[in-house]
Image (cartoon, rainbow, N blue to C red; front, side, top):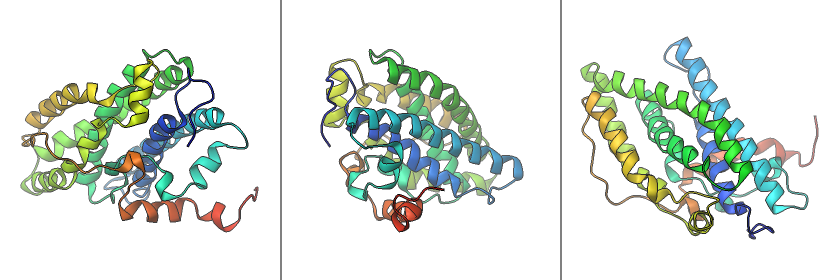
Amino acid sequence: MPLAPDSRLPTPDYLLHLADNALILGHRNSEWCGHGPILEQDIAITNISLDLIGQSRYLYQYAAKAIGGDTTEDTLAYLRDVREFKNCLLLELPKGDWAVTVLRQYFFSQFQILQYKALQQMQDTQLSAIAEKAIKETAYHLRWSKEWVIRLGDGTEESSSRMNKAIEYLWSYTGELFMPSNFEIACADIKIGVNPATLKNEWYSSVQQVFAEAALTLPPLGWSQSGGKEGMHTEHLGFILAELQFMQRAYPGNEW
């Protein structure tokens, strides 16, 4: 993917990374629509999905502008292959049970709110404006998911067991959030992006506080799965895209 023509703009890779994170988790969460544990939470997780997909749209639109030509938000979402996606591996994992879903949402929302706060201070006005709008939604996502982590962790023996299994399943994927890619470093160096490594300590401290309230044990930071930012994904992303992109692949260029 070429760099943005204007070096003062975020690179397309950086914008695509932000957009892909939001789109893929939004799509994963949408799998709960009609299957939530109770009606209120079915609606809540569906609304979170819509928020994330909405955030991805703004970012894809900006990426399309940076790339130029005939590129649109739709071509970026529907016509790229697995190796061209730059989302973190954590976000493409199967939805699992309710404990997995709410814990993953908490991990990502806690990261995303720090990221958006930092982006609001960057010199790129369009990305700052996107962050300013998205942070209001992310604050709700964080509050909602945090409450569920505490509720399940400090709940029954069954709910606590499920949360501990979710931690074991997800934890080794969280470190990738903070591993800076080349495009993140390039944007951070000229104050139009955030180096995620700078968010790591605050994220860990926040998670530590929530886990203490939830009576859960926080694992130490250590080795982590990685590769998503460079297009090296698990097998799960291919299945997501097969469903997400079917209509555009089957009927290219059609309009309804």
